[in-house]
Image (cartoon, rainbow, N blue to C red; front, top):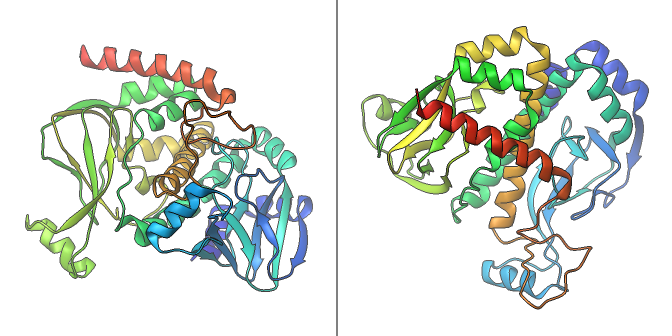
Length: 365
């Protein structure tokens, strides 16, 4: 239950700070809390009521109209989710690199707690314990949201992976000491082609960084219930599945068990001979418990990854899509599909150098 996520992850002092800093307010039906393409100044926690999440498909954009017509949707926007009490919407400091791809508005009279972004950013920088708990909660909420999107859209579309996006995010956010620990704790593993690395609803023994090769992510489509699928997997039986993503060099695999107790909802299988850095689950879990600074940075990275995957999946499905055509003047108010955020280029360059160093070092072992 989303209502329980914040209560479970945050402690009493965290909640006291939110009460002192935030502003409770009632909003009427139709009130827009988050507008697609814009960066809000507040983080909103839904205390009571219901919000809807829509993907705008404005009639003033020919490309949007085309995608809407092809997929049978109305121009006014497609509702993809409803949010209940406990959900968080708005601008989350240091998480995600782009404006939101969705619009969030109230369906009924609702009660929200609005926290100014600047004050939250300062709190996250100054209170490491709060940051670790907050980013873990956000990662759990994002994981739920991503799974809902996959359930609704993923079975009719394929979302291709974005090479190096995940690992550049990770290596750009973690400290040198964090990366040294990962290198010391992790083990390079060669994964033969057609090997299942993670099985749907099966145990996950490690966090993996894909250093070379290609893997496929697919979800089952048969009518078998989850328990039957689990026993089929144990007995070596294959289940029918549909590919929803391709993972390339640099992807992070198997992060779900570190933010949630649920079993993975998809199977990951190598398409060719691949190389991964395997970080044992138990050792990583212990590190997260004992090193609060590392935990804050790690959960922030995972929240960022999930935010980026949510955005990427929505773009790949064709909603709010913008494509630059040669000879067409760029619009400062439009985000293009292949546009880079200059604020993160330096961080990405550093991360790219770190990745090359890691790969060279591990391949010599």
